[in-house]
Amino acid sequence: MTTLHRPTGLAAAFSPSVFRGEDVCAAAGLPVHGAGPHPHFDDAIWDFTGVIGLPRYLARYARILSFTEILNPQWRYLAKEFIFARLAPDHPAVRELAHAFRIPVQIATVHGRLTMLTGWLNWLTEQGVDNLAEVTQQHCAAYLELRKKVRDKHGVVVRDSSPGYRMHMVAVIQELGYYKELFSADGYLSAFRPWGRRTAYSVAGMVRRAGNTTPPLSSDVFQPLVAAALYVVEVLAPHVMELQQQLLEMVPNRPGRNNRKRPVWRVEVAQAIDRHIQEADPFDVALDHVIAERLADGWDPDDPLLRVNLISLAHESGRHAFHYTWLPTLRGHLEKAVSEVGLSKRWGRTAALVERADGRGSVPWTLPMNTTEARLQVSQARTACLIALAALTGMRKSELAELSDGCRLPPERLGEGRVRYRLKGKVIKGRKLGGEHDQWVTIKQAYDTAGVAASLADPVKSDGHLFKSLSFFTPYEWFLTWVNGPEGRRLGLAPIPEVPVSLRMLGEPSRWKWRTGPVVCWPPRSISSTFRWLPPRAMRTAPVGPSRC
Image 1 (tube, helix red, strand yellow):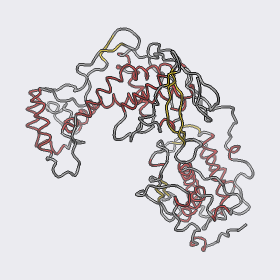
Image 2 (cartoon, rainbow, N blue to C red):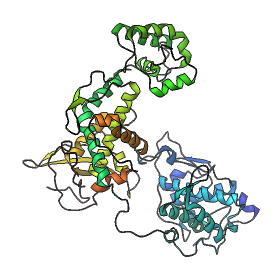
Image 3 (cartoon, helix red, strand yellow):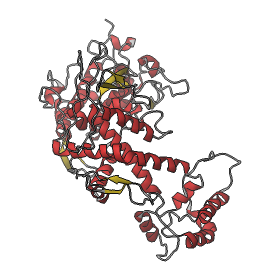
Image 4 (cartoon, rainbow, N blue to C red):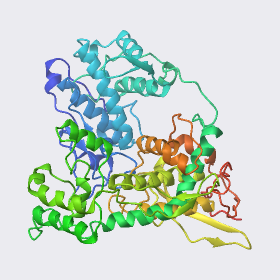
C-alpha cells in the first residue's frame, strides 16, 4: 500500500495538494449541464448548481460549498481535501488510505459536513489553536459541551440540541483523523483519535429505537388539519382555479424587460388608468400594512391615493412594481379617475356560494379580496394540496418534490366498484443520483388532489412539477392562521391546535414500508362529507412487480 507522507512545519503550509487543478465533478462522477459551472479544487467556492439529477427539494444554497468562511487559510485547503475525498473515494490518492470511506456521499451530505467542519475549525481558531497537532481530547469535549445547547444570535440558550445533531458533529471531528495522511498542510497527531474508540453514536448519547422515530401527529391535530385541506381541495379549489386564471389574464401580454418597442411607463400606466374609467371599474385597495407604511413615510391621511393599490395598477400595465418616482407625473390623472370610479377590493365581489364545512348552510366561497390577498388565496390552495397529498400518500418530502404535472396514470377498472389509482414519480432516498422512477397505488382523494395541484401549479416557476418548492414552515403558518382566523370560522372549519407540524410528521400515519404481494384497492369515497374520518393508509407498489387487486 502506498503511504502518503504529510509535510510538517512551514513547508506544510506551502505544500501543493494532490488534488490541485482537479475538476471536482469529473473526479466524483457527477454529470454537469454543458453550460453549468464546473467547480475545480482550487476554487474558493464549489458551485454544483449545474449537476444533473440533483433532487428538486435541495435548496440552491445547499448546492454551493463555500470554504471562505473558514478563518484559517491553511485549514481551507484541509477542508477542500476532506470534502473532495468524501465525494470521490475512488480517486487514486484516496483509495490508498486505510481508513477512508469507500462509498461516495451526496451533495447535501457534504454541505452538512462542511457546515459542521467550519464551526469546529473556527472554534479552534478562537481558542488560539492554529495547528491540528495541538488538538487534545479536552478541546473535543469542550466543543461538544458547547454544542449541547442551541443558542440564538445573542448567545442566549434556546434549547438542548438533538442527539442527531451532536452525532454528526462528533463524526466530522473524528473523520478528520481518517484522512490525516492525505492532508497537505495539517492534521491530528498520528496517535490521537477523538474520543478514542467510542463511536459518534455513543458519544452523542443516541438511544437505539425500534421503527421510525418520527412521531405521527395526534388525531386532534391530524383530523381537523386534513379535513381543512380537503375542504379547500374539493370545495374551494374550482373557484381558486378560476381566480388564478383571472390573475394570469390581468397581464396577458407582458413584454420583455429589454424590449425596445415596449411603450414607456407613462403610456402604459395611463392606459391602465383609462381602462378603469371606461369600464367603470373601481381601483384595487391596498393592504392595511401598506397604508400604515405610507402614513409613517409622511403621506397625508386625506390623500385620495392613500388607499390605492399601486402595485396592482402596475401589474395591469404589465410591470412587476410601481416606482414612487412615477407618482408626481400620474397623480392628477389618477386622482381624477379615483374620484370617478372609487375604490373596492377587486376580486371576489360576486363570489359563488359553497356549503360550509360544518354543513350549516351556504356562504360565499370568499369575501372580496385585493390582488395581494387573491395571490395568497392561490398559495394557500397549493399548500392545502401539499398537506393532503402528504397525509393521504405518506410520500417523503423528496418524493413529493419530484411529482410532475403528468404524474397521474389512467385509472384501471378492475370490476364493479373496483378502481386502481396510481401516481408515478421518483424515489430519491437511498437511490443513485437522479433517483429511480416508481409508482404508488393510492386512493381516489389523493389522485384527485394531484390533479388539482397540477391545475394550480405556477406555469413558469414550477417547471412542470406540482410544487415549486417544498418549503413548508411559512406556508403552513399562513394556512393555520387562515383556518383558525375569521375566514376559517366563516367557512365552518374546525380550529387546528397550534403545534409544530412537519411534512414528515404529517405523512407518518399513512407511511407504508416497501412490501411484496397484493395490495388493497380502495373504492371512491368523499372525505369532505365526513370531516372526522381518518383516511386509510395509502399502499405503495411492490418493487419487484406491479401490485394486484
